Length: 105
Image (tube, rainbow, N blue to C red; front, side):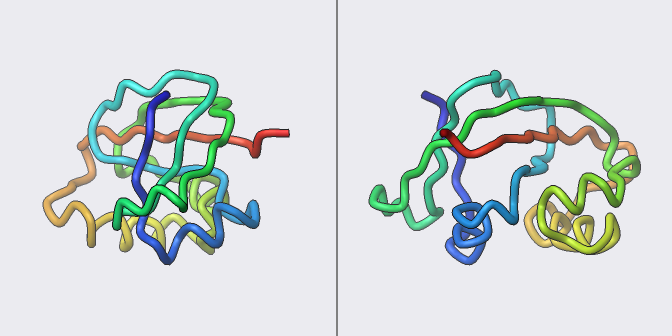
């Protein structure tokens, strides 16, 4: 099973269902189906699983408000500002991977 790491402060939004997506710089090879989510601290007790429903690629400049809402942000601008904290050199033409999921039943 593929595992993605998230900052500890985002895990609550994922567990509650407020965050149903992630955007990562570059073209990531993430398949549909089960995905493990764990904290960046590596605490395996935080491991949870979700069901990836879509993986799409787009340019950073094409991130939309709808993308942002899936990640529990008010706007594309807010999401882009956060992404720039993780990827300081990201620019408009750079490709990002958008991963959407739903909780496992």
